[in-house]
Image (tube, rainbow, N blue to C red; front, side):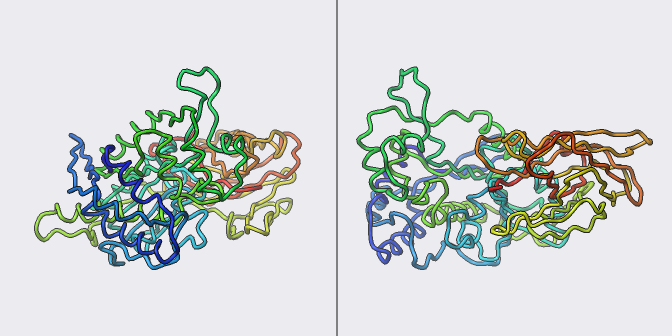
Length: 473
């Protein structure tokens, strides 16, 4: 974690422009310098206290990094302490997935280890992996380092996900990553102004700057006389701190400057040039090296003979889970009525759904030896009338009829996008199969789209959790 007073020095040192060749050298120098030269904090969280131990600092040396890239590098990036023997798993949203990179396999999990398993979902929260962790990972995987990038979506199941990971991998290093972006920033005419704050994108549109003009935006930010700030996310901070403390994890913060305006000026070049929403390859290299620094310090503090590797020391899955999603494959092993059809509704992105234009049925099987909560995943949007409300009926535990309504108009954002929403519908009894009866309740422009079923433990994962990646309809 960077010390606040060194944020500005670091940012100023890497805010210049250069050719690709010079940029590559600068980024490589960032890689080599970050561990021992840049001042940042290692934060090891235990159940008793938060201890911080600073690395040695030499801020003046960072002034040699004046030729860093405006928007990336095509050169080789040799990471500190880089090898592929450490087994890495990454969970997160679009940044961890690698959105906006020409090659998503250059996102920070793969820079930490080329053999990393990246379970990130584009714009997804922690709820899906918290419900379906065993189904995602399988029973044979072993991990030494686990990365969790869910800061502002931490209330959607981060504690449950971290807890399940710790129970399964009791000796793994778990790192909670907090990323911010320009889209988090807000601006008012002055600090005391009563006018509503506007977003970075709204401000950019007012200054008529085209996408990709990073240098021009930085100059405009330097001249801007408004008041910039980042909204408080105290609840998210508390949730991440608590989750990390519970599992003995680390926290990694993307650095920022003394003020929001300075942060935007200094770190805008770490984000994609078109929309400044996602990290570019320089930003991914920074996060990868901060991760490696934590790994190095963790290993340096182990008892003699203790290694990072945790082979042969795995825990249990507990009650387990069983999840089946077909959105990206179209492969569904469920039996369903002939009125329903598996459809590739988006050929450009290869998105599949079981479309339900009228009433019909789907048979599901609870594979466990006790009743389990069933979750149904479906496409939702914020546009009323796009998809119909769907009634689901089945005979539940003790022969009681269960009725549940799925509302596909409750997407958690204001954009014209489709979101995989997952809702719990009730406990499914033990047995060869349970028939779910689906009946559309109102007309919609498009048929109801079912994309998955999941069984999990309702004690660990509350029924009200809703989760899923975001994508264009």
